[in-house]
View 1 (cartoon, rainbow, N blue to C red):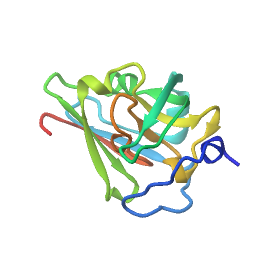
View 2: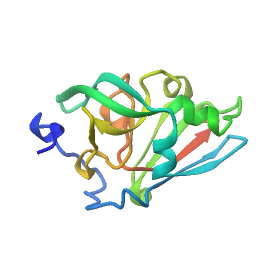
View 3: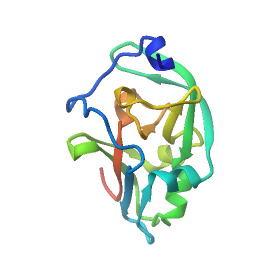
View 4: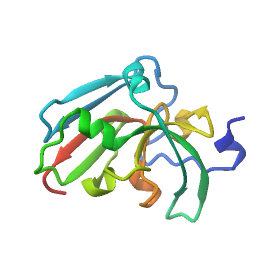
Amino acid sequence: MSRLKALRTPVFWVEGHPGTLDREGWKVEVKGLCSAPKTYSWHQLLELPQTVADARLTSVTRFSVRGLWGGVKLADILADVKVRPEARFVRFWSVKRVYDTSIPIRTALRDRTLLAHQFDGEPLEEDYGGPVRAFVPSLWGYKSAKSVVRIELMDRY
């Protein structure tokens, strides 16, 4: 049993559970207001500097779960794609591109805002947004989009 399941973390999928996803073939496209747009493979994401944030994911539905979220700082990804100065918002798209959510770029640049692929040292399961999800502990959980396939940099919300 995974640590998130053991903590009785609810499984929420607005767009419907995606089922089993191909971790090894996973890609995250970063585009929009950047000078060097890029599509990261699963292995390229793992080759970037990794970090751990001891933080809480809190839902508007009154649950929260605290642990060690592991992944890549979103700030590092934005630096890698050379985000342009006019970019003000970051938009995340989940698998199947049905669900999307946006956050201010100043929030994306915080140290604990991640593209997360682990919780307490375990790979994130699809139930909880694996293989890779946004993790934005300073905002409500619905801003931490699950199973992210695209990140778009925008000048307006």
